[in-house]
Image 1 (tube, rainbow, N blue to C red):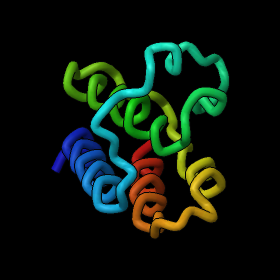
Image 2: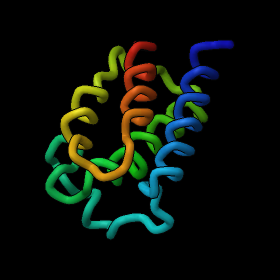
Image 3: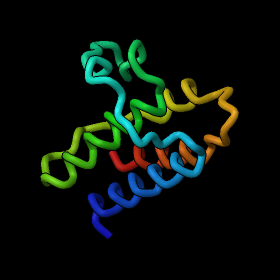
Length: 104
């Protein structure tokens, strides 16, 4: 399996896990939520929203268009911090993000 195929599989698994944990939303945040200049859009979105509407969406667009991949991805440390204390079991989400990071 190619690196790109592995990344697509990880994104699919991440989406499935977020959905199973009740973190996958059917409706996007207001357009103004995307105007943030704060890392992870922390001032306008919950981290799970950022994962869905920014991280996953942008990586899918990069992979679908066969654009060059970034040199690194270090989202799992932020996920560990942002998702701790949630009532859902987010351990699989964090593990999938760690696997994603390892591809860079």
